[in-house]
Image (cartoon, rainbow, N blue to C red):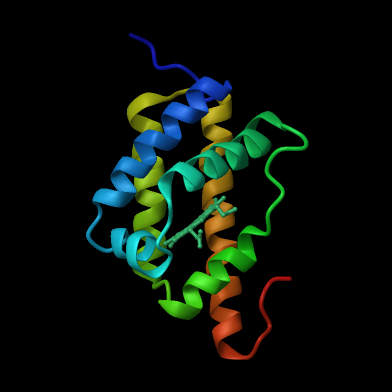
Length: 134
Ligand code: HEM
């Protein structure tokens, strides 16, 4: 059966559930979500879905939070390592490749990789001398 593209709110919702199943099963990443950030999944998952609807479908008026500052606060409690970023991106890409194919899935891949690199650079800079992003 051909894989669908990641181009509807329904596919994005399913993608986020699948991605988070992997993140939360990961021995290195799970404690960041569960212990350091103590996320409430019923609050968190709808935000992640709204974020990706904005990024991939151009949804307006949905997700409007400061993602970088939110990660900075978690990073201050428990620093993200380079290996954490690699793992996050590997799980994102594996989830995409397992279930989705098409131009929007490819855009998601490029965006995630670019944003992860920017985020990592911003967090590193912050912990050095405060030259972080925004
Ligand atoms: C090492 C890599 C990453 C880790 C360990 C990580 C971890 C987390 C954690 C723990 C939260 C919950 C924060 C809280 O509610 O206090 C969070 C939120 C979020 N993350 Fe990440 N993250 C990573 C990379 C990324 C990347 C690269 C993106 C985007 C491409 C991203 C997108 C988001 C979004 C949209 C939220 C929701 C923030 C909100 O509450 O509005 N994350 N992340």
